[in-house]
Length: 466
Image (cartoon, rainbow, N blue to C red):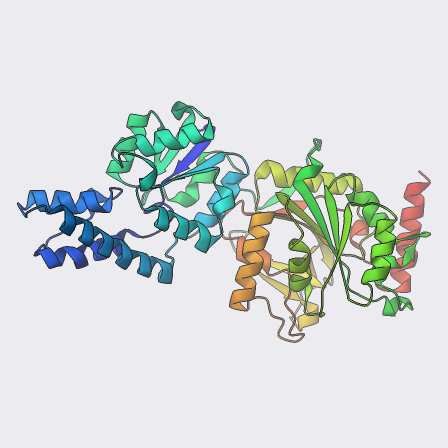
């Protein structure tokens, strides 16, 4: 099945590399009953107490219900402690879920306890990716019975025959087939990372402007404008975003671009400029909010400040000195981002003497990002960003959190939390990060100097005069 309406995911063995941990936990508790030859493979996907009971029956060990319950509790607690400590996710599993969530209804179906399912969801911040979750406690019979998958399909309101189950075990496969679902059996020849490709999601890392950009739903988008800078090089003590170009503030040009295409706009200001920016923004629309970045600690921090206000599925970030980006370019970028189900889309252009350069490996993956401001050795010609970035909100939150926790992206010269390295972090699988060639070079000029302002004024005046 390549056109399902819903995807139903087993947890252990599909998303969490837990087989050896569960096997070790079973061996640990069963040794107390004299069992030294336990093999986990045949029991994967079954309830813990049912595994213990079956092992006892096969070995003619008295099946005392209290003893079985005690060993099951001890096994679950022992495994849960290790899983919480290690969190052994399969590589790319969260990224795969995030991409597929952009197109399909997702459900999590596990024979494990409600506590183990909750741990997985909370520890990895993926609760919002699933429209339904079924644990072993939610159904009368665990795998290989079909109860779990039937319950998930019912909760989603989708017929089981329109569901694709992602499983790794024999008992799970039997459960899915009995429920009437199609199945994708993960394994060495069919790793989870290949599922998006199997389902037809794009593997492109670079894409050109689409022939026609279809209208998108503004309610799915929030724009964030980092704008904590001062216009010192422009001879101004005001916030740079309030500097006038072609007779209007940069903020006005940006709001013209963003308000028709986004549910709301969040401007990230410095403490000293918040009030003035808020007054200017409030005169335009009640859908503009202004938040404060307390200290100038880097663009990653600025974006995180704005992200706290975001509730939409997608986020568009644009630097607060980019008044020349055209509506057609933004619409093309949004179109590509949504149709490919990319985690992140970064429009890029090639230019001589770049300030930023996206360095790629042999497979086209963004391996590192060179920055002149951090003292990196820059190429004579390079691929640079355009000041516009699009994300699935969940992916942006996860990436920024990972960068903060791991100290990833700290500038070696500035000491700031740089934002652009997030693309290296997310670009682990083909299709995760899309470089969109949709914005022209003239549109990428930021207002940093009087010469920049004069150049952009001529462009903007020419456009407004037709």
